[in-house]
Image (tube, rainbow, N blue to C red; front, side, top):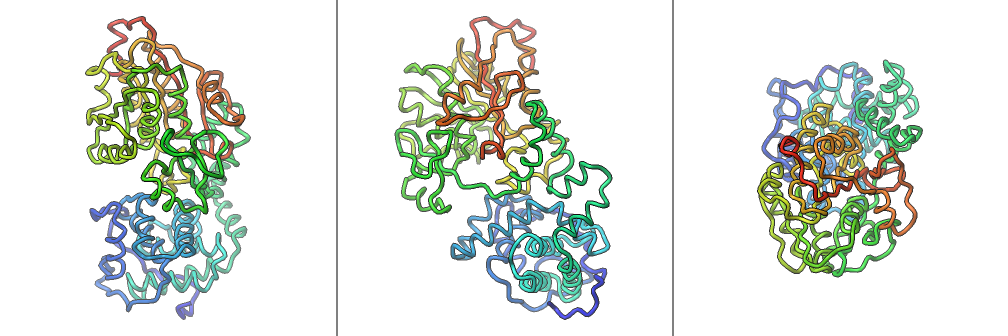
Length: 515
């Protein structure tokens, strides 16, 4: 450790900077590394950073990812791979950097409670750069086999490099306190201050209370509320890498996944070589996402000449899967993505699939009005809170709030309504979200169906069961909708409803609803 004689943390590490202040470097891990190593972060009272200290490369990469997430709202799953590549980490160090970054982000709420107790001050009163170093060390001390002295010393060095000796002494004292108690003792200590059972569960499981309550309601709709703690545990486990082999262009390898016929596990856990050698006909895609696209294709017999649409296509993974299926059946696929940068990602994703796919850049909410009654199948993979992908996007749980749900639901209703308007008679819409929140799933479907007399709901559970290569345990809320779960299926918590348009036209009043 750094030689601090007193265990009591000194009142340093505070800053006037606002937390999460954007530096215009979203997704730029290099920019964050340059800032940390050069001491460019603001310092209290003009204090200059200390001399450069030795930090193991994997920890440096993990710390830089934490800083980018905190400071620039970066997405860890997007910036970590290039950061690992730029640092030239070997496979062992790459695995360590991944575990440190993702593990720290997943359990941030729990670690902040522990740090607050050890520092005798609230975590949000600590300078963000210092706090990220404390979070990183706390994860190593309480959730890994990393030697305590290495976790503490290198995290103190990170603080010293950015903020100088005073801040490093503060960090050292806090971490010495944390290292003196076991994970179980810290769990008991922070839970004792909880005001409710849900707060205790939130601290233990590292999920915000509102997320826990939303997940409980979704499980209760299936009569399986007793699975809540299993679900929370699955959210905190590192997901296995799943690949998709585009039909007609690649064959799935081993090990095969249990449900989607296109899905298999990444050999050795590192998919880059396989993806590169395939020329893009193999790529990373969660099995749940594959099942959603396959269900739309299998919902009814495919007739040559059909016209399909992916309405909210970015970044293009499901689009490419649908395009490969469409190619095999002489079907025309189109895509739409309103954000130009994401539209480019869709076009890139489609490069591996022979043939032309038109990618529109229109507002999906008005797309149905301008393309009324022309598509036979439409995928609406709606923008959502992403609560179903907390395993892969660990920082998302701390970024989202109930206000995000309230903002997204009207958009989801408008997108689904627009898609139904774009359906030809007999056409089918697959409405999907990577969220199990009832307001974003069943609530949206019910709201849209209340305003339509020309739509019937299909049994999506039967379709998915037919697609699956082995028996799949799908809960039921009394409808034919599908909710997948990480703890039960090993997939993201994808939701799916299948809606079919009849020959009956909606009345004028109903037709305007959701515009």
